[in-house]
Image (cartoon, rainbow over all chains, first blue to last red; front, side, top):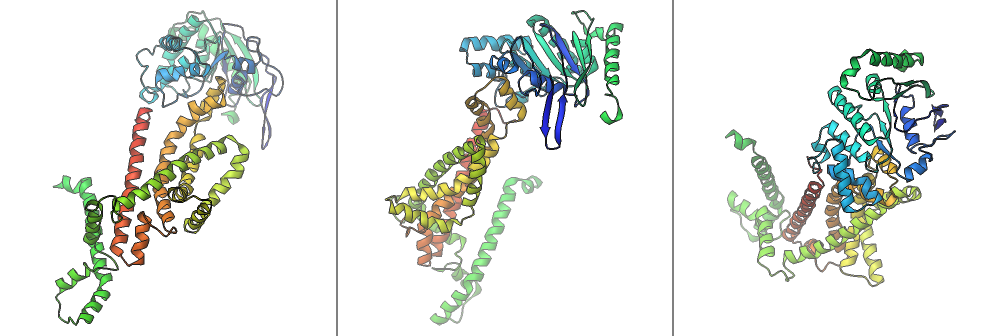
Length: 253
Length: 293
């Protein structure tokens, strides 16, 4: 598929000839420098952007059908919590929009909040939580539809390294438990390698796939795995992929 | 001692005292020519300074009435007259206040509706906004008599025409504030609603409306104060039977400056109280929404 934005200075080719298949249950990371179209690709899957050429299928549906069927959850760069809603009300927002019974709603809230380890914070307002906790609430919110696909756009980009490590480990646990497919956009090489079963390296202008790396790391991943040789080898290959696609050139810095 | 000087009360009292001093100095100065004339006509050639000052501050129809004249007039007309009396300031205030509140309520509703139209419809955005702005460039003093006369011709008189002048002034800040408020949700929040496949109604009630509420209160504070101005102006061209505007008008007919000033003070007190009440409601609502930190 391709995606071109029409701007005042002429068309910008955000994505060009992307051809990718993601299997069910995979954890796929998209990595690349800013402007390589990784977020645009994710937004195209979510039907927030329309490809100008080609097609995308989400579990056999077009993105707009997938959106209508609430077949995916989306986590944004910032938590995008509504400040006038408490934690549980924020998690309940998607459920209010689809409209489900009160008892079912309560169950959903408890279940998703326990998955992100936030039991006890139901009545707190977003401004009373740390950045990491806010992002966890937004992940719980994205789990509301029990969708089999979770799209995450640099969800931990604004958090410090220690919180990020913690959330990465939690996300892996969540992924193992919920058995879903995750598409994860990041610009951190260690994060991509640590989390993914498949890493898609992208290059900028126009956005293209430079390399696809299937991770050989085991599914069980303690944080220490990041010092293993295997981990460093994969990270090296990602870096090579980025370098080959000129991501390290001065003009792209 | 230092604590006293730095306290808020001290600052407020200092300013009040300064204003009072300026007021009295100006009163003596402005009333002097008339007082000299009075003495001349009465043939009084000998007077002491304190007698002179005392007389300038207690004239029956001074150019600038002194503070104690205004306040004692207010005390008498507020507390010592039955509120049904035509001489009661409470009675006149209520007449004006009822028109203000009615006009403000209509104006707020009308303003919100226009803002909804403008934010949801591109054609309305382009066609309506210039008219809304143009409406406020017409001097209210010029258009108020027209509104009163036209409405009178179709059989509407009394409270409603005055209220409509309040509406005319007060809907404007509401429109401007709410257009901004309805557009205040961030792109990321709108995208989020898109991923839920939320209907436009749901987006409005779950995102746009709560986002706009803080803007609504800011606008309402401006709107309610000018709604009062609108009601007073609306009372002027009717020949003025009752209301604070009527007090101002009859006061100026008969040179009753004390009456004018007490009506002015009453209007100021009313406006300040109204703004304060809106502020209190705002505090309450934002606290319930968890928006206060």
